[in-house]
Length: 109
Image (cartoon, rainbow, N blue to C red):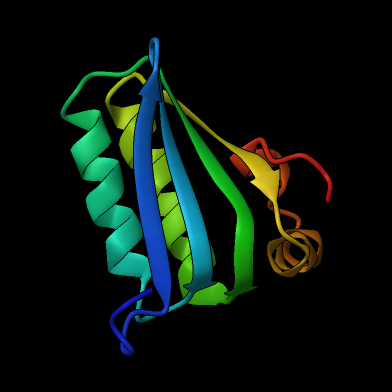
């Protein structure tokens, strides 16, 4: 996170038919667009699946949760499955409170 205004870093990689998006930092109103951009970028390469590694998130709020749900909807609209492959404590609490763990195919933290 070199930019002091950047609250989250996004790393994209590909392994076979699966695109991986790793999130580190804070997934909130300010960084939600970064996840949307990453999802758009990986969908352009037609993966079969997207795995979001969220173990590096130190914070997630309702805007961040919405960004994850929008990413899932965008993936599904393109015939691509999306799941959260790893969950940080911060995201785990949010998924537990909202009951959305299953919607994001996210493991318990």
